[in-house]
Image (tube, rainbow, N blue to C red; front, side):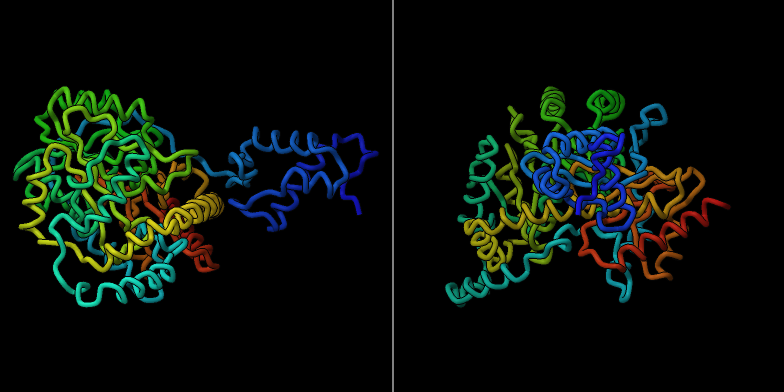
Length: 481
């Protein structure tokens, strides 16, 4: 039975649009879902492919769907107000110490509470865990290495893993010598070593604002001070604003995520990244790049590391497998630039070596090709989750709420009305079985009190729908006060 009325005065492409709308209204299509192919609808309705394409082009113009190269068309979240840059309201901050330690501890504790939907932790792997593949590879490794699995390893890590990682960077055009790399216990240790290579107690470290609270705590634990720099919700650190900050303060180093900031999901262009490195190296200021989310991009190609544009060796790249494969393995790495010897000395003094069994397992995972296949599915799943989460927030939160549109990663940054204090809502959310990350903890000076971060790095279930609806009710209740 044909679903289109060819005798109607209404254009056929408009009838296709009406059909898609009905599918959305009935719940047959949800945000993030792939639409039927052009050829499939053409056969189903006995109309030409160009007619179906005209309908899809119009839906794309309306912002209802998006086209992905060599993949098809996907339904976007409706009514989601995108969080836009707010340069005019930004005021340059002063170097400060962390002011919300207690709240940060509560957020960490909430992740492990029983019967609680954890939307406060950024753990993308939850959306598509590769646990079975890794378990199989680890068993294979154990059968080969025997007693070596419990022995100390080289200070700078397994040579085969370093070489494999170096080759992956070389494919991006970055000239990395695997002998210079240091394998660390997660990216956090890599960042700690990098900071100690270039700064000491009392020094000022420039960070993005908002900034991942783990970095803020790390800076403070080393006796250093964090200085916030304006960060665009879409394009990351503003180089011109950073230059003004450097003119006003004696900044020792910068710690930025030029690709996929947490919590914004912002992404600097290659031109902006190059300009950033050039400007910093002209002032002899090191850049420590937190690069943990670069493999979880939603753009057509992977972002290029800032390391590519370094001419003086002042860029240090820190990354890990925690966001892409195995957070529990605690395997990260540091590309130390000109600070190689200092980095290895600090690693030796700090933790001596990194677990070898996990290194060998991840090396096999990389070389087998399974890691890259896993990343493809993980990125696809996260993009789907992103659209569903944006749609849920738009549906259940007050209409004036604005939502980020991340270029990668696994979190949404949400702005509520100015009088809403999300830290006050946090405890009530926990009581109702939902956790999130209040915006206040993403600023050493306690800004962003009316913001919150939600994770879509999750395995989707009805519990997620209910949890977001619960948060929406709490925000709505607070907004009315």
